[in-house]
Length: 83
Image (cartoon, rainbow, N blue to C red; front, side, top):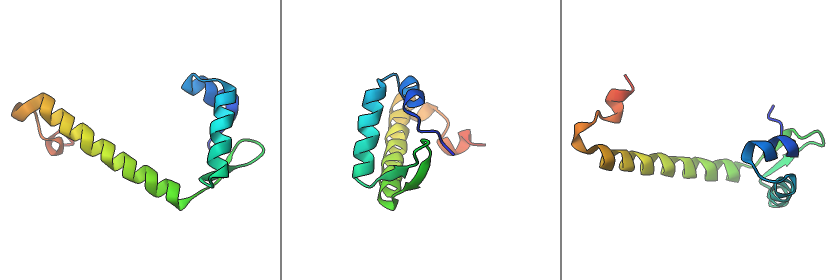
């Protein structure tokens, strides 16, 4: 299980514990996920998962396009790099 303890998250993302608390409280109010009293993830909404998957796919497509622009035609295709 992932730990969602405010102190740990604040250190990881270099923000205040208050900011973490406000962000998590708002996300929980929106129904995106719920956490236990001990700071563990209890549940996550299907809508949030779908939103994240869409965002991640868009990021991958964007960075592929950037890599192609930077490398031009002289670089290996991503399929060749995976081998």
